[in-house]
Image 1 (cartoon, rainbow, N blue to C red):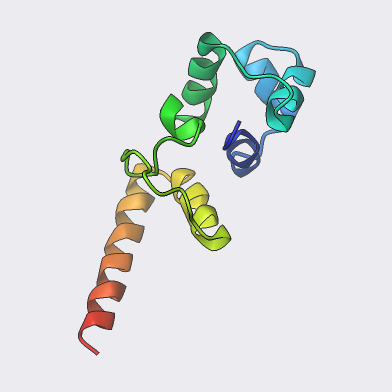
Image 2 (image 1 turned 135 degrees about the vertical axis):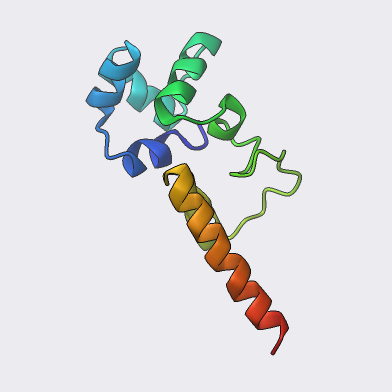
Length: 110
């Protein structure tokens, strides 16, 4: 699973806590994170619900804005930004986007 470990750690959950939250055995989470097995669609939906994201985001087909990723060649820092952004509340996302827009606008006027 592309983002499972990242989302779990951003939420501060252990494998056991996440397993209890979605109703699977804790070793199942480890197997998914290691890519040994893939979750079925019902478990993908449960995971997406637990992380408050789409299944497409969870499996790496969408970025934080809900757009399909055409070029997945993000740097490590860009991937980190995406993961951290996804963990924010909607209000904090709006604030951060506003600050980022201001910063980009200021760069353009230099």
